[in-house]
Image (cartoon, rainbow, N blue to C red; front, side, top):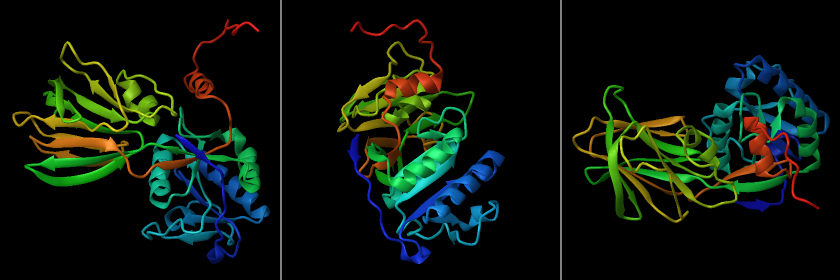
Length: 312
């Protein structure tokens, strides 16, 4: 994980020297109201706001807000920041825009856990103020690149910020797989699936599957079995330069690949899924200097009453 300072890029198209892109879960009334407050605060401070046409129809936006089509490859050109309002799904959607553009993402959690979010709904005034004054840092989070092979051919490529999960399709039958790390077989078993995760994803699907929590500044890759029928089916933590592979055995039913729970691809019997460190990170804007330990305790409401701390 690396940190960088913030810079602003002029955006002449909006008529403002500075422009922020806003992405919101418009299906939630809380997100609509939050978006309205953020837009009003930014416009009052002379900062332009850009939104997607598909979302603009559901938001009470003034005419000064710029709208663009999601189909455009340069949708975030000229924007200094991507502000995302919503739950984990919306934040992962925002990560797709952030990775494609290189623009830092600032998440405001309107859902339940929201580990990717930097602020809560009650912090909207603070969010606007920090954006206006550029009082935030930017850190880079590891991603993974995913390649699917079938019969010697590459049939699918993808990426993930949290995880790439190989899962069974038929509820009544297990998926038979062999795990490989750095070109060497590790073990094989029947299972419900395998999660290959980043440290960022260690608190997401991998956590639910029994994997370890990995601090974001640790560079590593995780391989976590789901419902494995085997004596050795422990989570594995490898070097960030390792190549993880999951081979779906030819005699097993076909599986499915899910990347961040958003993008999917069918895995035919005999398919091979390779996961390695991603070439392009996702940049996250950070408002707080609180440790990840404090974030972990707060997000999971962990019991820490009675803690006295180290003696002075």
